[in-house]
Length: 144
Image: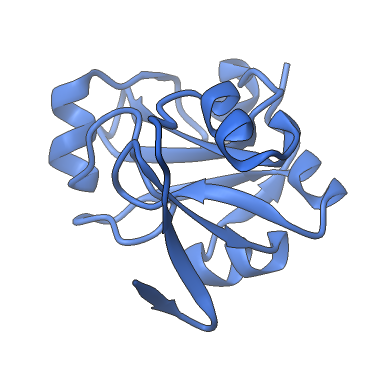
């Protein structure tokens, strides 16, 4: 399936529910996998999507500083309600509702990265600048 802009969804033979699973299935480095993690703003209840390199962990304090409010990891119901996706298949694009998106600066180490395409067994390849263009996200240091 085409996403537009030359991006194609790739269906995997095995689940890519984790960054390590996706890297194994694709034969790439875990650093090249985009983890799409959803946080909930504690004051505003807004959805914050943090797209981070598969090798990195998110620093919630940095995210809170960037969005000017405390955040917490969203539960499965919140993720589904705000994005339309289940945890493990959250795509950085195509959400059902508005998201504040932050993009891990470490993703720019690579010319080619891979992101979930809405299901744990589907991904798509793109460049870090494509990710910025497609999401309207802000590039920042979000890792621990």
